[in-house]
Length: 288
Image: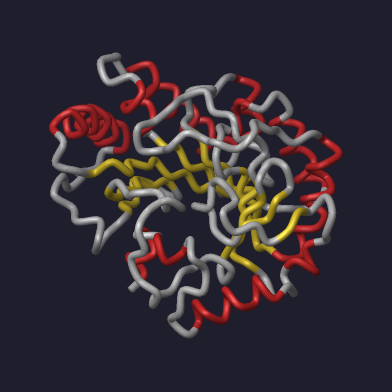
């Protein structure tokens, strides 16, 4: 089988702390060259692309450009999710590597961390990168994410500045009253999109049970690997509440053949939430 994505967390350390993104409670960790080569080699046969993200900010890893180069040498398509605040020249060059097929900028991260700051310079850096990508890597998909749609007035004010700048830059009109339940993206130009969604609650192991019936894309379209090598079934299992194995001790082939993994996958296919943690997750209700 092949997943659409395998999320590979090269570091769980972030330079920001967003209100919508809970702190990482597990030990801080970052992959080194030896481990990234091992994990990429194991994941290569099982994924259409690798996404350098679970928690943490990938551009904050000192070896990020080297990791991109390693993926290129192994012929692995990459997707990068970043808050964009560390978009220096070195990281820009890495993101424009042809092995990177998609870049997601979590724009709401800047607004959330710097609510009173002038976002002009930040937005200009993102648009400058977009202009370079159009010249040097026109096959690159770029998503500007606003995953903060709500009734909060401050969110609306901050989003408005960004939306107006996009309208000017791309000569488009953006609907302010879009319902993300029915539409989540707008093509701005070529392969450049605005992607919007509402805030969501991260699953919490200490929360009350919500239900036992339901489904999820975890184990079916994707899995995730934490910075210490632990494999989890879902990109929202940030604390490894459902550890399926560790790539430092067990190869991925064995992990994907384990009873726990297969039981979870079979449950999702049949509308049954086999794991206690999944029974407390409200995000998966979006898939009903």
